Length: 439
Image (tube, rainbow, N blue to C red; front, top):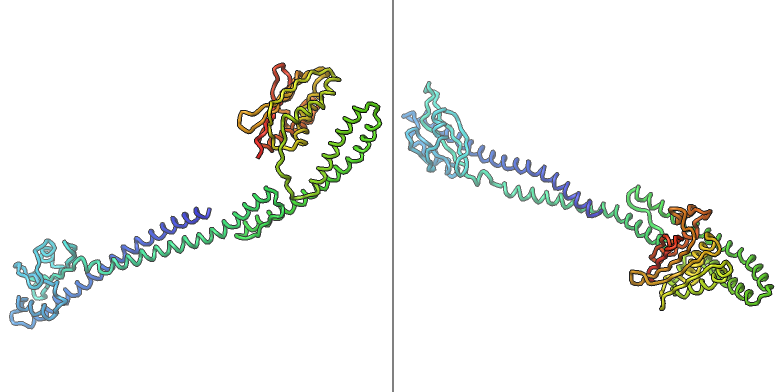
């Protein structure tokens, strides 16, 4: 933006300067020409007047060559470019060739100024009051060279160009200063917004710049403070809610310990232990505002095998056939084993919740088409998805809120992957989750 303002200022200032400089430059040239021509015209008229006065004093009563030479000698150096031209073609003074302008001056008996080769000439005919027909016998010609016509013009133009360049530079510098005062607060706002989005909830800006931008800075600080307060309140709510789960968990543990089947009791107690650990972790993270958890990784195949074994007990009771096919080797996913296990539980829980007992299901893991990616597929032989967009929360159909798939989708996208829905080969539901490579 700052560069664009400078370019705009440069363009506008140059247009303004040029639009004023061209007429001024032409005016300077015309003034120089008029000054030189006026000086020569004054000289020519003075010499013509001197010739007429001396003619009235002489016995001959006419302009003669000696008289013309004497008058030009009196004017000295000023008359170096002056020529007295007689009607018969004889000249006194500076050499001159007959031209149409001289003939016009003789014929029309009037002063004449005209441009010619190498400059301009001022022609003043000598009129005698004693001649009723106003016949002209002598014309005084003053020649103005091109150098005199343009005397001082180049210097004036150079000074004018320097002044124009100075004005353009001042305009561009002033605009750049103004642009910097506008752009700097905007850049600070942008950096602060990026920092706030990155988790720096304490980032604030110093409202500066024009009134409108300063108001945006004030609004940003208010938004950041309000966001920090809302997040703090949300963390407190999550921590309180998680803490309340301890009481029912304790009750479930006591009931599990009274089971007659020792193996079932141990399995149930292990699951309660994991649930309590998840609650503890939730409380701990909620009590640490502003801290970002470090990157975690889990083996997709190992987690799938573990959670599939947990769900197989229920599948056997409902007469479901389960197929688990995990790729040999490690498939690293940028999620903790606990979060990844919760995602797998969500997908398998949907199978049990939305298909009839006895419906078979399959779980597969494999490397993705893109290096570093991993894929998890859960499909069943049920009725499939009845809604066109079951990923939208609250619109999954079949009486479901769609919350489970929505959470799974968000979890996958946090790793750089995605979740897609489709139809299995048997016509049932198929959920494919791709996970991005760990950092």
